[in-house]
Length: 406
Ligand SMILES: Cc1cc2nc3c(=O)[nH]c(=O)nc-3n(C[C@H](O)[C@H](O)[C@H](O)COP(=O)(O)O)c2cc1C
Image: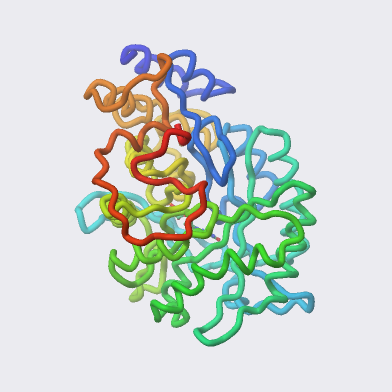
C-alpha cells in the first residue's frame, strides 16, 4: 500500500483520476464517503465561502477538479425595498494578500489578508449564480450552496422579518422545488464589530436565527450556521455550540480576528484553537448538530484531526490560494493540486494518515474497508455526562457516534 501510495503521488502530479474517490476505494479499500448538510459526498473536501466562489467559471473549475462541495460567497440579505441592515458588510475590495503566518505554537502556515466583506454586486446577480449552483447540485457532480448574512438585532430589538422573508424566498425560488441548502455566516468581521460585544446577544442570534429562517421559507430549508471565533474564551465557544443546537449543521469555526490590524486571519493559530475547542466539546460530552470543519486545512492530517473530533467534511479557502510552487503537483488548477496533496501526500495525506491509524490498531476495516466516517471512533470518548443539552433533534451527532452514523 505504501509503495503504491508513493507511486500514485508521483504519477498523479500531472492529473488526478476523474473519479478520485472511486479510485481510492478500489486501490486502497478506503471509503472516503463524507457528509455536508445532510448530503452524502464521495469525499470530505469542499470549498468554503469567499472570493474563490464568486463566479460560474470558478464553480466549473471546482467541478472539473473533483471538489465534493462549494459554498458560494456570502450575500448580504435585503428586504423588498433593497434595504440591507448588514449593508456595512457589502464592501468592494479586490486586493488580497496571501502571506505566511507564524503561529503562537511556532508553526508556519498561510493566511489571506483582505479588507473586503460580503458579496458586492446586485442580489439579482447572486440569484443567477444560485440557479447555476442548483443545476450543478442536481447533476450530482458537485454540491454548491448559497450563503447569507441576515439581520442580527441588538438585545431587546426584534429581528427584521421582512429582510429574512424576502431574501429566503428569492433564494428558494432560484434554487427550485427541492429543499434549499443554506449557510448563515457569522463572520470574523462580525466578531470584531461592536454588535458582537455582548455574549448574551450572540447566544440569542444562534438560538433564534434558524427559527426565523425556517418560519419565512416557502419550502423546506436545511440550514448550517457558520460559527465565528468570538472574542471570548474557549468556554464561550462551547456555549455557542450549545446555543446553535437547532441548526441542521455547524461549520466550526471561521477565522480569528486581529483587533490591532483590523483583519481576519488563519494559519495554525486558527486550527489550534478550533481543534482545542472541538476536543473540549467532545470531552464534555456535548451533543451538537453534525459538524463541518474549517480553518487551516492544509494537509490530510488536519482533515483527519477535524474528522476525529466529529467533522463529517471540511471546507477550505486559504489552501486553494497558495503560490503554485507550494503544491507538489506540476499541472492542473489549484483545487486539483490541492486535492492531490491533501489525499495522496505519502506522509501527511489523508490516505497515509488513515493507514497510520490502521497500523496503530485505532481504525478497523469494516467489510474490508477503512471508512472516513468511522474516524470519530478512533478517539477515546469520555463517559457521556448529561449536561442538560436538551431539545436537540434526532439527526444530531453525539459522542461516541451512534451506529446509524456509520
Ligand atoms: C478572503 C476571504 C474571504 C472570505 N469570505 C467569506 C465569506 O464571505 N463568507 C464566509 O462564510 N466565509 C468567508 N471566508 C472564510 C472561509 O470560507 C474559511 O472558512 C476560512 O478562511 C477558514 O478556512 P481556511 O483557513 O482554509 O482559509 C473567507 C475567507 C477568506 C480568506
